[in-house]
Image 1 (tube, rainbow, N blue to C red):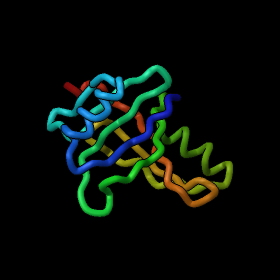
Image 2 (cartoon, rainbow, N blue to C red):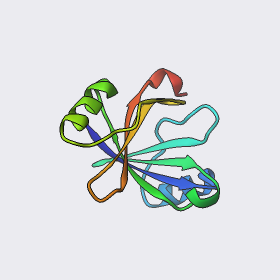
Image 3 (cartoon, rainbow, N blue to C red):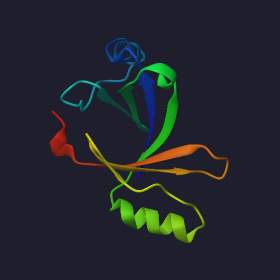
Length: 115
């Protein structure tokens, strides 16, 4: 499992330039350009196009290497209630609230959907 914060931005290009100036490099991108991955030594920063209230928000996400239903089953067994998996432009994801009520996203990627 890999930790991946997601930074939501109304200007993905400017945000990408900012993090490139900090030393990150551009990795995989979505075909429409609304999703940029910037690998780093200890994980990866993802930049996601957003508008309205989501601009400036940061979300904790994890890239998983197993079926999301298996993860959801473990969460339910531990007393947590994940939302159903969702088909996304990058693969599939599910969200679950941690004990403080903060949403955490779990992503299973289909790299064939990337450029």
